[in-house]
Length: 240
Image 1 (tube, one colour):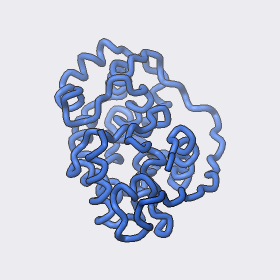
Image 2: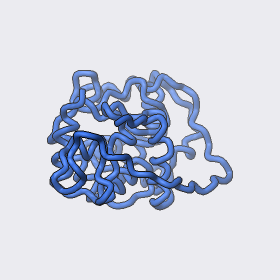
Image 3: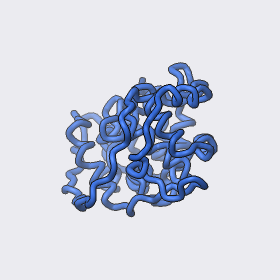
Image 4: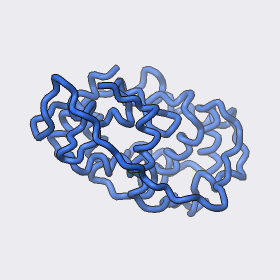
């Protein structure tokens, strides 16, 4: 089976997100209603961001346990930090770190990691509604088990389980787990099964927030059982 993330993730992800609520605003003492577009008046300083991110390297360096951030798009980094700061994206460590960041800190850190020192763009005056296109479940791949509770982690990841409404993880994250950074889907390679399982459980049990990536994960994981999550986490841990 050939699943091309460049073709499928671009229309399926907006379709998933259209089921969610409007963007939930971050709540902080300095800026109680911060969205990425609200940062448009701030001038990024990559040099200051490098200083601020000094303590991040322990986890986010190539040898660390967290995803490498260097080279990620600035809007993606800003959106993630805003979500962690608002406690709408699950991860206790990152929520604690982000709670101490100001709007300017977030803009500067994103500028350093992305290498992009351009200011965030303001939101357009009006945003047309997103209409989800019809989604055709991917066909069952020859040689893989039929959909059902006995499906393996590889089957659920690569093919899904159409009969139960389980969308293949590969549709967004790619067959190899490389993700689609240009549309905000992170790479998921090089992680342990335990860490993947904990993250999947957190996304499934978390509330609908109106923030794209957590909501897409919550929607995709809702029809999956805990056994499904365990199987998928075990398979994802094999992706390098």
